[in-house]
Image (cartoon, rainbow, N blue to C red):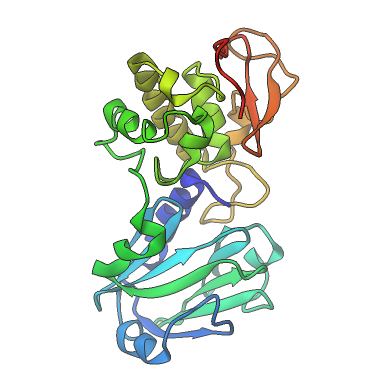
Length: 296
């Protein structure tokens, strides 16, 4: 599943491609992928103009001038592919559908614009979805209702992070940081990277963090996410940007997938452990674990 920088990269790319285009029709072959009434699609999506493309956590929102929005979750294998004449821009899981002629057997939704261009939602495993929802009601969807703050917002600061994380004082820091109700959009890669950057052991309990730790962690989260955006997201197997290019952040990762290699800060060996079921990378020397802490 993509993390925040990957979805933000896709959002920024699609923003350049589909805003101000008028939807002529939307067709779908799978009600799970497109769980919407045909009457609603005709009334509130067809003949509507795209006003904006936004992101909330790991979800995309295409806003329409009808007052409705298309809410899209790509999940594990989702793609959004825009095609207009010789133009062909892909975003998402890097299967051959990004470059092949569309629609194909993985195409779940086709948005046809009045100028003849198309936006294809492809999804091999059919876990992703595209829902048509009134814009004022989007925040009431179950997915959005419990989301934490956006770490790239200017308002996000260490005090806010502290208030959120101390809701789970007895939990290890890394699982809390990945809890979408605590902070929106941070997954495994960027949790490891942010904790390394702030010299915090991923297994330390939240109650053991000091204000200094929250300051450092907040700064590190923002720096890591911004760097990843500049690099086009991670190079993990499953995601490319809105022009079909793989991100290259992992080429510059400091700790993720570097187990057995020297720490870039102290030259000690990076290790990998399992923490709450997730592979976790850190430097035991730079990120020491207090004696009273226990791994979970």
